[in-house]
Length: 121
Image 1 (spheres, one colour):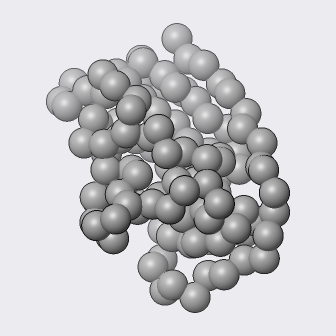
Image 2: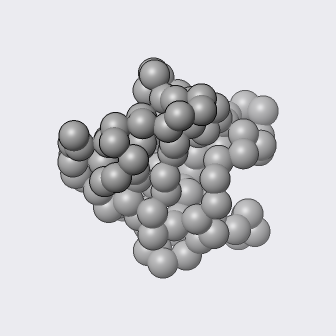
């Protein structure tokens, strides 16, 4: 079973990507598809977490896949937007995703948002 939800951008603004953090970008709403590392959320980054929706902290990758609760819980410590598709797979055997509160800061997904529970999208 899967659910596909498109999210629309709010208000585009100029890109400010001088952070040097690989796939992470912070800007006011515009996105630049194709950039990024596609790696897993590691929970690192600023202790204060991602900014509010006035400023985007982008994770830029063709597909960002969250498969474990720890990844969901760590998402907002660095990001609040995904430049690409976001897949949340709740069907993992180890540390399965049981709550989506950890992505409550999510402001924008430039691609599609898919929540699946069978290991496939």
